Length: 137
Image 1 (cartoon, rainbow, N blue to C red):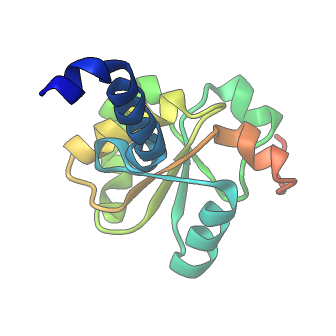
Image 2 (cartoon, helix red, strand yellow):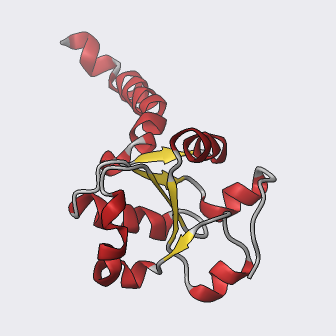
């Protein structure tokens, strides 16, 4: 007990360091949805024929999107969710500009009982940073 009192600062530092080491693990699958890197997303699309769902606004979508992406803005997702019904048990990769709106869209899909929902970590910006192709228009 005396040791704990004398070394409270060191113990706090050790606990904080341990938490920081585990933080990437928690971010990797926040809310039951896997956050995929651009490379992992390419594998999901190619190996599992995943649907790419782009939840950005139309103006953002037309500046460049992933090939064959389905466009449904996050604000309209709840009312248009029936368009995705046939993908309820199939892999879906959700993306937006940086990953925030797609995380919200993933929550909506999970609540609607979609089983294989994945979030593109970093959004289309991460996709472009990885020098992956986009379609304009």
